[in-house]
Image (cartoon, rainbow, N blue to C red; front, side, top):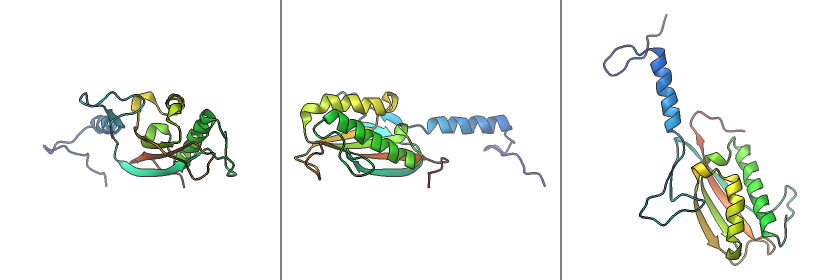
Length: 166
C-alpha cells in the first residue's frame, strides 16, 4: 500500500520538493545563534547570549594542561598550558562527535589576569569567530596542582539528528 503524500494545513498534498525545502530550511535555522545586545558592553572573543539549536546538552569537565598520562604540560608557560587545555577540549568534544562549532559556553579559570591577551589569542584559534560561545572568566588563587595556570570547562549542544559517539 502506498503512503499518502504529506499535506499542509489546507489538506492538499505537498510536493516532495517542498518537503525537502522545508527540511533544509529547518536545519539551517537550527544553527547556533550569537546575540550581543547593543545595550551591553562590547563582547571581544565571546557572545553575551547564545541561542542553541534543538539537541542534547553536553557538559565537558574543566580541562587542565595535562597529557593523557596525567603529566603537566608547559609548567610555567601560560601559552603552552592554554594550547594543551584547548587540545584536551578538542579531544573531549570529538569523543562526543562534536567540534568547537558546537560549543555554546566556556568557563575559564586563570591564576594570572596579566595573561588575558594570550588566552584570547589561543581561544580564538580554536573557537570559530562566527559563532562565539558565551564565556565566563574567573581569576582564582590556584588550581588543584600549583603548577597549573588555567582550567576551562565547556558546554556544547549535540544537534538533534546527529549521533553521539559511544
